[in-house]
Image (cartoon, rainbow, N blue to C red):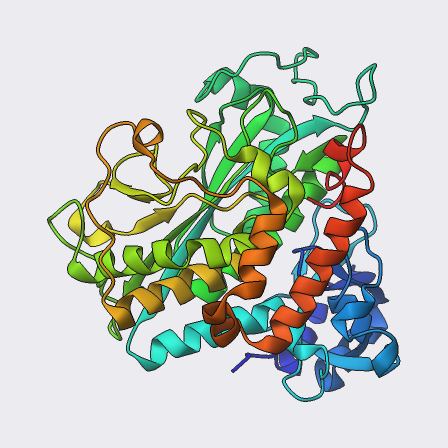
Length: 455
């Protein structure tokens, strides 16, 4: 069950932060966009005591922030108020804001939040986790989120461009793993790590990624739901800190045709009740349980693809020799496959799921990954032999590169309807179909910027 926060948390926070004037209340919609309200300090205790009514339409919006009537959350329910409550531990300061401001994440109440509750992405992930735990499996996850640091000003052609370096130059070279590139954005990194520390987000290794202005920072692994909570708040934090530095942090899957795409690699393992890794093995390929988990993820990949790659732009990332996924493949310590089992000590054995774009909703992506794992274990699925060498050259089948194919696959999947529920899929698919219709009328020059503002 959802762990809503006790009012004492708000009282303690207000006492420790007497300067806070505003509270940013937010909930994540199907597209992973945080939406909410800006409250005054005096309104915080009431939120913790009795929740906050939010319109049902808030969880059925398109990426453009427009109502989608087919979700069933608009006219037929009168845009009814649905009550949401704050999540435990989510009340934190936003150090980059000019007015002293805090943020608090809310989630729909199981009953008081109806009819919007089934559309709350966090509820879907929580339900999948509970099903795994009922069978004795405790999922452990972590996110690696890539992003571009862009200039808030467009180039002479009105297109996005990398943000200026500290020395005033514009990044033009890839320089993957370049240390100078990290040094050039040191003021941003300093504030980013400081904000992460203030919010309790375990940000770790930073690298210059495979394109000018592209950065990746890893998050520490932990219980799956908490790890995805951290990923959601981290993404919001990166955007806020970047904005304060005169930049735009872009999590769009493929903002530049000629440069690397932007992924969200998801690391996952299963623990027993004592916290011991059930994938741990001296064998680099892991335990039989790990192989079954991989088998399940591969078997459900097409059915789940829309949750991993939710937008038209997501599918531009699927290119050979790009370190992005191309086929339903797996391998050991191999970055040319979609599901990679990294090397390392036996107790760290896990799977790196490399399919998601950085534009995916972390809650929905994690739910689909874990549901696939559960399917593989229950059906004892065999993933076949791991790919050795160049997985791009050996691929015999490829992931769809058309958004419409992924929409259709999810819509027609019996497994997805049984696993994710008709109520959630009604909303999610209605949103995606509405976006697809609008997108098909706006392809061309506007194509690249369709998701830039919210990705």
